[in-house]
Image (cartoon, rainbow, N blue to C red; front, top):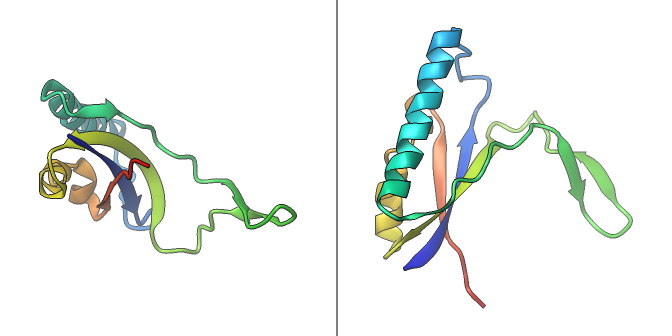
Length: 113
C-alpha cells in the first residue's frame, strides 16, 4: 500500500455558513466519510482543519504574513490515507463532503525516500 495526502481546498466566499443544524450535518458527513475510510483500514491520519492565518517563510531572513485571503482557493485541511494506487485514492476522495460545497480534493502520493 502507498500513502496519499488529501489536501482540501475551498473558496470561502462561496461556502454558505448555514444554520447550526446545517453545520452539524456537514460535520457528521465529514466524520462518516473519514469513518468509512478508517473502517476499510485505509486511514493513516485523519488530519485536521487548518487555521486561516499563518506565516510564509521565504528565506532565513524573510518571513511574511500569510496565507493570503485574496487568493481564490485556500487550504482548509488535510488527511493521510493509504491505497493500492492513485486511482484507488482518487475513488476515496470522490466521497469527500467538500465536493458538495464547491471545494476540491488534491490527491498526492507521498514519496518515500
